Length: 109
Length: 115
Image (cartoon, rainbow over the protein chains, first blue to last red):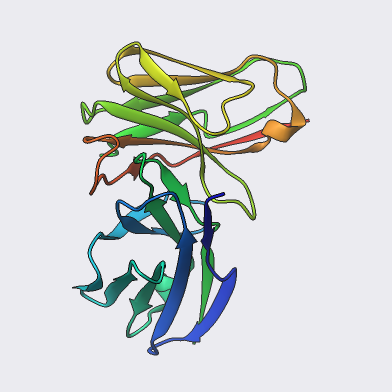
């Protein structure tokens, strides 16, 4: 079966750096997405990786290793507004999106 | 200024009653999706549409039907609601459908409670 694994919950301190991991086992691979979802709100797009390596976008970076079935989202200079769930999703060989259950990130002052 | 709106945002209903959720977009995107989101699960695709009157099933389509008579509207119907359909339902739209860098834009969600 297809599977996306993410930690359920993480806690970090304002101003620090946090890395949220995502491992996947899917039927093929056509890209990996990260979305942010604040409580009670809609998911919003953060990043897309299809090639190995690091993609940087401001305070957020996303890394992909296709050979290891692994990605991480790196958040720097954490702010209270970064408290949210972070969803990892993989596009499989049939171009179906497979979603992880999400990682709830709690930021403490 | 929202390009995608869902209605109703909240609904409480009883087992066995029909329920229709509406998704309306102003972006003229070809692709529209209905997902459900439950604790401990990733988003799960119910149905999607790739054009007017063109729809297909997702991974959890049992008990749900959809219709798309206009580009801007995508309706999700629960013919006879059950407690297992208590969930938050998200509509999403995209320009490119099932392709590589296909970014989804989500509506604000509809919280449905079936008693």
